[in-house]
Image (tube, rainbow, N blue to C red; front, side, top):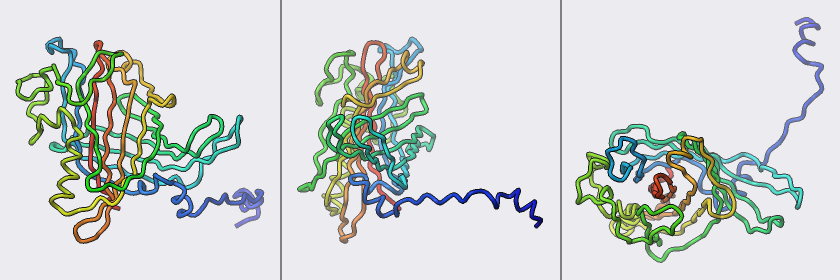
Length: 312
């Protein structure tokens, strides 16, 4: 190789030192309540959504879509701290994971949802004055992006974990959400009443109890594992976030704002350390998520739930 060619390849450029990052273990240990997320999770779920119907034939202006789900989520550790520079206080270091969530119809295998995002662990801050917290950020192909914030709870259940009831009853925008157990006045939600504005055929095995409270699927799953399969729920880390914490929120494209405005979202992800009947430990994630869709004067809870097992 000639000297001229060697020079053109950059041999005389100033040396640029490599930028080092912390070892993977140190970064992983810094994840705190998020430490068990990295890896691949898969399992079944259920989705209930009242979506707008523009045909003019629906008496209540919506179609109730019900789906069994098959979900796959892969979490990857962000390999170094992310520095947030402070102006009112000193800098903070955020640790986190990225994720990609894919959802298909549990019966047909058809594509339903894809969601890239991140979970973040945020240290305590002085300005604003705030305890350690977590955040979840994601983007939705309908034209939404959300940021929810919240906290983690560590529990050691005595038997079955507590999964509080929920309500799917729509309500007038700006009024309180009906309490769990409130009767639903809309025929689309009542399986004893035929309706052309509900999924048909119904997903096999769907019950009225799941339409009234989709979290019943989580209770049934964990009860079978504990009471029939002989599993033990050793401990649970609950990741609880929402848009109702004077932080975060949801941004929508104009079409969403005008047709099915999504303004609020709450989710609870329970990372369960399980022990099977042979004494083997495995990780399981039970989650519930509720997004409020506002259209035609009402708020409609869009609920999804699932039980996913960490495979690797």
